[in-house]
Amino acid sequence: MEPARDLTDSAQNRAVLSAADALLAGRTPVEENPSVLAEARAAARSRRLLTAALGEEPVRLSVVFAMYGETGRMVPRSEHPHGEDFCREKVRQLDWLTADLPTVTWNLIACDDGCPDRPSSAEKLRQIIATEGYPDRGHRSVTVIELAAVIAGENPLQTPVSPAFDALSSTAQSRKGGSVLAAMAAAIDQGPASGRHIVAYTDADLSANLAQLGSLAAPILEGAAAGLGQRYGMDDAVLVNQHGPSTEPQSTGGKPDKLIILFRHFVRALLIPDLAHVLDTQAGFKAFDAAALVPVLPELSSFNETFDVELLIQLAKRTGAAGLATVPMVFTEDFAATNFPSVDPGRRHLAMIEQVVELHDRLVAPVRPATGEAAALLALLRDLSLADYVRLIELLQERDEGDPTLFDRRWAVADLRAAIGR
Image: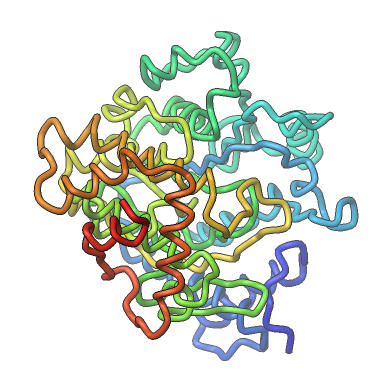
């Protein structure tokens, strides 16, 4: 039995939901693919958690995602080798999750982040929406906005994002974050007149099955400000790659970029203590209480790879770290058409470290100045060149053999300095 999960295989995508149906009914699924079964178990758990958390008031689930160069992945595999038919599949997943739950409705909003394809991602998705007859408002609606039009004032948002967002002059300044935040604001604009409203964001691809959204929504319905999907680092989190599903310690321990991930978490935990329990801040599957988002959006000014870290910091300032619930998820790594494929230490990984330092300086230091090891780490990172960073990660990789610790791992700053001759 092939263990891998093929996101372009429509039969596999449907098999996940069929196997989840069997699990919910107390039957043994006929499916044998371990990756499909892992995803099915997560979907079944999600449905149970959502059902248990519902009360009498209505709930709207809004899901947003950014698009850049997605015209290949949004069509079926018969039309493109990387085709996942992701819009139709996302609709199918949300329909499955909310079936026979009359108090729950959902909608999808996609934001084109300046896609260079011709036709663009926005144009192609609008064609699919027209073909399928999805409504443009309300339950089961699928809508498209374009960041360029929002920036130009051609498609103004009723819910403001932030003064920093208003200062954007082109989509090139967004780096995905601007599109996600604009789509979140649009989701709030389209929110229900009454009841609970949960706004989630995901990636355009099918790496995170939206049938799992119930697991993220449940803690919010029970009082949390956010439900944060975690691909690794906790029980029931499953990471699927070309070899099939893995859990800890293998899901992190077996990754070629393991030390990049662990070092980034070490930096984040030391410099941003409120996020120390969020092991996987970069996972593209997070949900938020819309009411908690409204006062936070105007504070945001980061639109790069760590835009959501700023969002989490601002939320934690209002709700406390306990308001950020971490939730295990099944995530399939989809490197076929990714925009961030490198697993070797490089400029973009160092940039993420630098962004954490910038967020610390701007948002944490004014109320909680760094002391001790945190201050020493800051001093090291401020002068860290790309060559120093690459050498440091490579040395940590060399010394990694036999060390079983993962996200609990900490390094003495003096040892890090010595390792790179600083």
